[in-house]
Length: 51
Image (cartoon, rainbow, N blue to C red; front, side):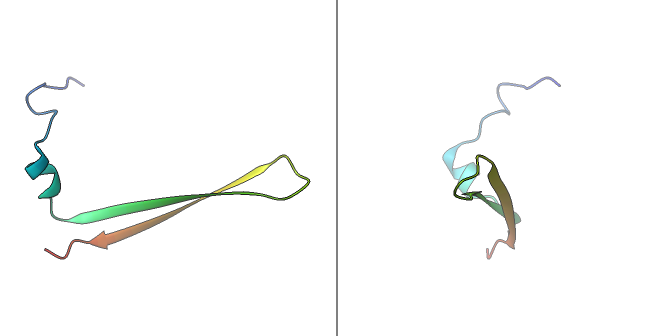
């Protein structure tokens, strides 16, 4: 896929003026004492923009 330099960048107004769905992801790392293994959990939250 070819990226065109003119369309690959957004102005600040274009970036913050988006409407639609917003995705927030939280990564949670846990480790039980006495174990070397890490537990990794991802939680996604989709929300509709209020604009």
